[in-house]
Image 1 (cartoon, rainbow, N blue to C red):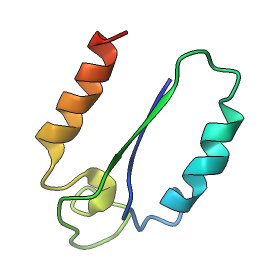
Image 2: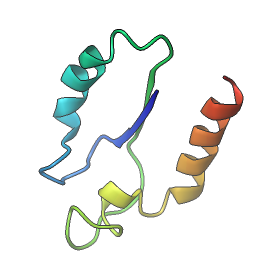
Image 3: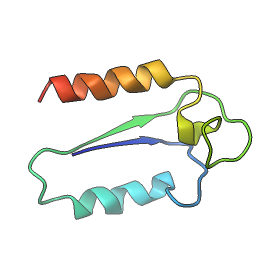
Image 4: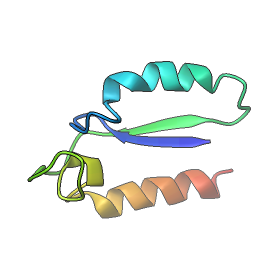
Length: 73
């Protein structure tokens, strides 16, 4: 299981501070990883695509890292 999150995501429904408890709940999953990002730009609603929530400005890097994780399995 792969979890991808932006460290500055301002969406109240999925804050970065919630990642440690989430990852702990996945302890029984044999293959898991958390990939985080810090760059990009945030504009407008923090829960929408042009904010950190949508990985605005770093989309290619995010997709490349996800694809790399999948291929390495």
